[in-house]
Image (cartoon, rainbow, N blue to C red; front, side):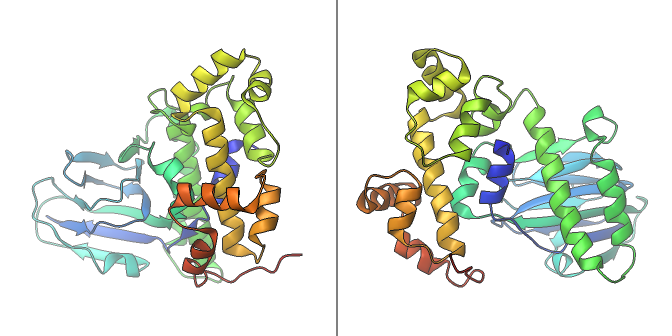
Length: 309
C-alpha cells in the first residue's frame, strides 16, 4: 500500500453533502471560519474567491480549488461586491442566488470534509491555504470526469444520489490532493517526501510496519543511502528526524484504533513497538496532548465502536 493511502485512512474522512450554487447578477457570499477542508469546482461561468485576508482569485469554468486553511472565505461575481452571509448554502443540495446586475450566470459545486484532528496535522500544516487547478491545464485532466459526474448528480434526485454525491466529493478531494502533491513547490513535510524516490521506500516501511524496531540504519538501507545522508535528507524534507516521525506515525495509527475499537492500551503498545504501556502513554500524550484514555473518551460519541477480535 502507498503512503498516501495510509494517510488518507488515518484521516478518518467524513464528507458533508456537497452543495451546488447557481448564481447570477452582482452577488457575493461569505462563509465563516471552520475546521473543515473545502474542495470545489466551477461548472459554468466564473467567480472570484477570496480566502481569509488574502488576495482575490478569479476562477473560471473547469477550475478546481482546495481550501485547507480553515479560514473564512468569500465567493462572488466580483472581488469588491459586499458579501452576504452564506449560512444557508451548505444545508441545501442546490442553492440559487440571483441578484440584480450585469454578470452572467455562474455555477459552482463545493463540498466539505472533516478530518481527524490528530492525524490531520501532518497534512494541513504542509498544504497551502488555497490550491487552484486551472481547467485548461494538463493536471486538471483527471478532475474533469469527476466534475461532470458531480454536475449530473446535483442536477436531479434519484435512488442513491446522496451516496454518489458524497463519494464523488471524496474522489474530487483525493484527485485534487494528488495534483497538489505532484507540484514542485510543495513545502517541507511528508507531502514532499511522497514525491522523493529515495525517501518513499522508507516511508512505506514506517507506514506499513510501524511496530517493527526500525533504526535509522535500517531505514537508510531501504532508501539505498548512507545513515547520515538519509537522516539529513529525511529531516530536511519531512521536517522531523526519522525516528521522531516514526513515533508520531505510531501514535496516530494507535489513535485510530482507540477511536474505532475496544483494544487495550497494553495491546496497542505491543503492536506499535513500545517497550511498555507507560512509554506508549507518555509518547501518546506528548504527540496528542491527551492520554489514550482521555482521547478515547473524547471520541466515544463520534461514531460506533467496532468490537475487537
